Image (cartoon, rainbow, N blue to C red; front, side):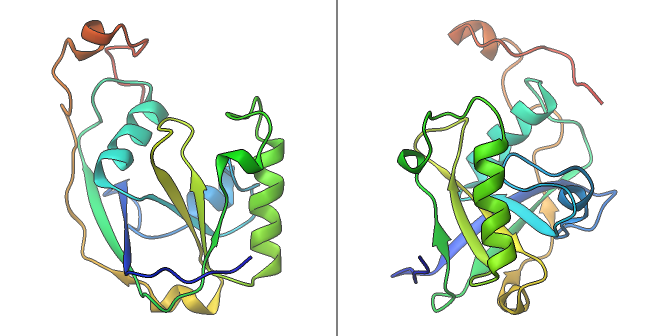
Length: 173
């Protein structure tokens, strides 16, 4: 069901300077937890902290590689969106991508809204957001110029030892 937020929303995306800062070509090529390959979707997070955390998990590291920037996106308050909550998916977190991809692919193909808020698997308190790059509302997003993000050390070197996190020390490139 499409909804409209009560207040303006924003999202954050951390991306390499080697690629366009707000482009769904990576999802188009490889897909994601929420989208099958072949679809133009840009992923972001509802906070800078979640964007960092999602990238740390993606890179399987305790620090991010250098050369990353943060892109802030303002979502107009009158822009319709859809939302998925963790209770919509059983079990949560999902054991594979088939359920979540079915939801994301359906949203993409219906083209009713250009924004889909989804629960984060790495943080039960936060959400990620998907932007449909081929939807007419995509052009209404206000994408800020990239700013130096969190490339290199984001966490103290021994942070994973403090909490027993199973995060490797080296960056996998």
